[in-house]
Length: 114
Image 1 (cartoon, rainbow, N blue to C red):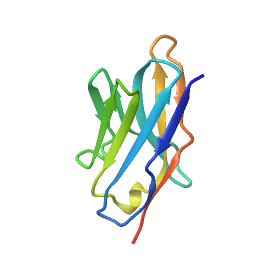
Image 2: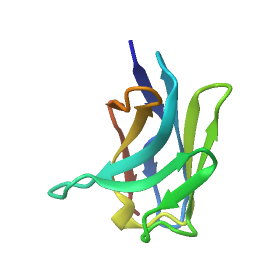
Image 3: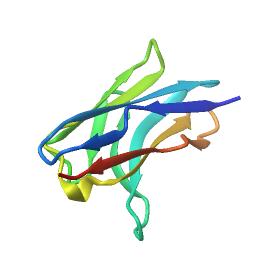
């Protein structure tokens, strides 16, 4: 059974930092990443990593860094220089290596506000 467990969200002031982590279990994943959904908006890609290659949304380039620990099956998102527009529920996503099935975590709230 595949499980994705996220941690690390919270409230932070503009300019601050947060680190999100996602622990995955139950399969081997080829692609892991983070998406976010702000109120009234569609879910959007934040960052993904696959085989050492990373991709970022233009809005977070230079501020966010995605990293993966293959031994622990975890993916993390270091978020620096946070802005109020980064406020959203952040979701971990993982795609299995064999069947290319997509799984989602439960989401973690990130609020950037003074």
